Length: 416
Image (cartoon, rainbow, N blue to C red; front, side):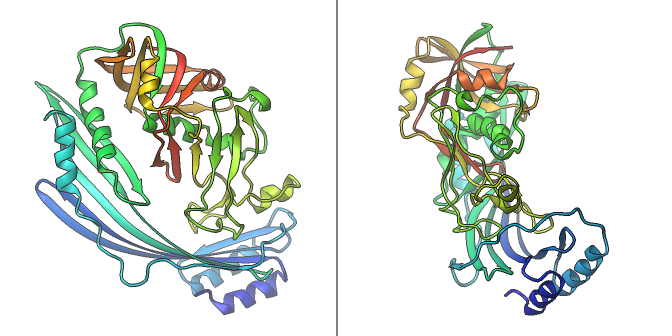
């Protein structure tokens, strides 16, 4: 529970202009490989306070006593003058599962079998880390807000090794599941990532259509995400023509939590609608600066840092999409990017991006030979404008917040 003495101290320091946050988290982790097995249990307790006293002040610590000391130290430091924003006010409670946290599920054996099947025996599951976690967030403020939210999830990382003759390749895949584990999807990404780089050659033609697997498309969307919370947009951004009209992008974390990290109600926001930049994601402070309403996107990556505006569950809309085979059938010549071989690089100010991947050549609407490695680079503005198709197979990936994407068809790209 929130500490009453801290509330009283904050009210003394900053009457009517303070916020107190607490997060407790527990995880049970299972690490498995063919020759070893280990279990780890972790607990974390974090406290944070924000108050306005001659400007914004912030302090964090691992318990109430340390937070009180940190607040005293913060009060001695100079602060930039800033008026406090309007605070949300109400009581919200979402209770999660009661009782002890269950162990992480045993998934190594079934995932190992699926990786072997999907790779036709050319890849093996080398290790699997699965975490089951549960967290409780509590927020109170000077306006009378009282929030308590509990949530749970399963996430982790899997590693596969592919081998063909004397050549070998390793693939690492991070996953997060809010519902039932998607072992088939994870196994497919591991198998392709570990075996496609073992192909004999790279792309045999310089340009063509470009299909992006949901995991690759999600990585691109995550790279673009800072645009949707930026106070100042890059010069290349045209609000009415950010992307092709087939593109609609939303952020909606209401299934995850009723409030954001500041207690503002979670709601669905369309950031891109029919290709046009439609809305901006706000926390309390950015909304006050812009004379706008907060959108419920005050995020806390850690209790150690103040909230900031940002995505919480960002995804492509797929209600008007088509089945993935229809996108594939429409490709005369192109490459299907199945797995990244390096992190996507995005320069938002410079309007540039670069994607390195392995995949499969598409000829006449059919999968042909594998591509050992390819690279596409260019202008972000052109990439968005050339999205010619959106499929219905949306999947979510941790980056680290959930990012959802389907298979995308880009009508033209230059391959290296």
